Length: 426
Length: 132
Image (cartoon, rainbow over all chains, first blue to last red; front, side, top):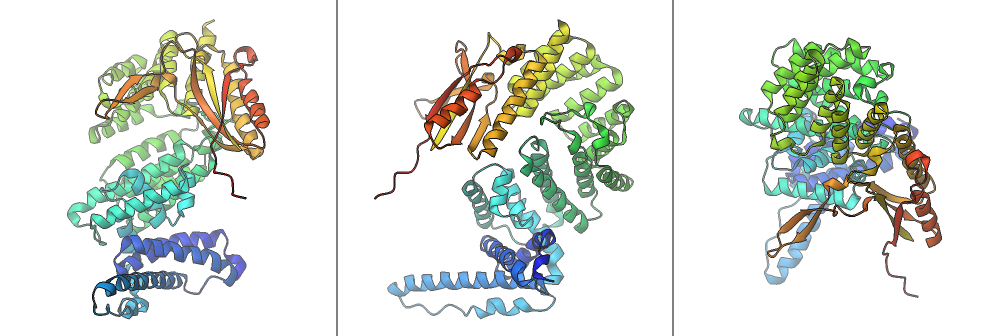
């Protein structure tokens, strides 16, 4: 490869190799936190050197070698410092030679044998239930995604120093909780995988939900979540929920081009120009979810993907198969006790059985503390009241929702809805 | 030098004033705010800007006797204005900060008439001067 060829592909190559190199380094040295720093330094060195000198023949070996050298340098410096400190007080025997650490590192087949497992183990570590979700997301993006701290900080709109602290605390937490670098046991596996999927799902949402107007950098988060979920799907091709999550992301992301208007305003699903949807992503998502559903074991991501597929399949909003969506939300509600699902169920119910049926369902949510004061309940109620022709009540609830939301595009949308209805009244 | 421009928006009577605007006026106002932020970004003066959630969601917190938070609703209902958002700009002179503030103040309101909102302009504290 020539120097000039380290372009977008070169960066992708680095990001793909990042978790493999980190896995190999942790396996050798044991210290997750220090290994993570060493690998970041190796990635930075590659980003500087490869464009000038060309990509080495064995890029992974190169990175592992550089990371290992950083680790041994660091260990040597630590030991030297400790020796200087202790030598003052008492004579201690010299520490064991460091060569032992590095010797087996170049062993042929060492990295190859464990690469795939390592990426998965890393994901399980970064998404460990002992970490808060924001920490897990940041750590996953850095350790598995190979993003720099600055890139992650930029995506979350926080200062780099803040993000560096968040990552460093997460690593410290992994260190002190003594999470071993190994696959979870069979007993732990389902719970741990669901934590991984949740972190990937949140990462996607963080990018998708806020990719409005000028904050385009955040769409990178959705793309990164899709890339990582693709990688997990490649590692666990037979896991139906991993496939379901990938399909859900693709089918949702496909609508992104139609989701905002020329002034950055939010356009709801029912009013979107469907010719702008990404047909290729829809086709891929539908193929994955169809293949997966036929296998049997149904889960929440698969059901949500199936619902997204039904929306995406309708080339006009009036062609939407609402009875099927209602049935799928019914299944989802049985699997997960989440009031947000009831909100969506109420909308589907209104579409199938008329607005009074939907409004009746919303009543059960008024007493739900998890939803108390949440703008979504007011927004959905406003929408159903509008459908039912009760304009004044709809206006009141749109306004209430607008006063409660913490999203500016959402507030603009809700305020405009109220204003339009008020203008019709005159 | 950096300045913080705080937008004190009219609260309206018992409700949020914008709720009673016709949709086209609302659209013009939203469009103005978007373009304004874009302009400040392009001129290289925008450091940061945030809009704040509705005043009904605001809370006033004071430390109680034992340091525990004492939370009350606020800002107070009788106030005519509320802090709706802010910009931080990095400009050459205070005059430039005032110009920007005046532009924000004249954001279009009902019927496209400038709102002439109160914009509080405060200089952001900076590092000590370099010793000569």
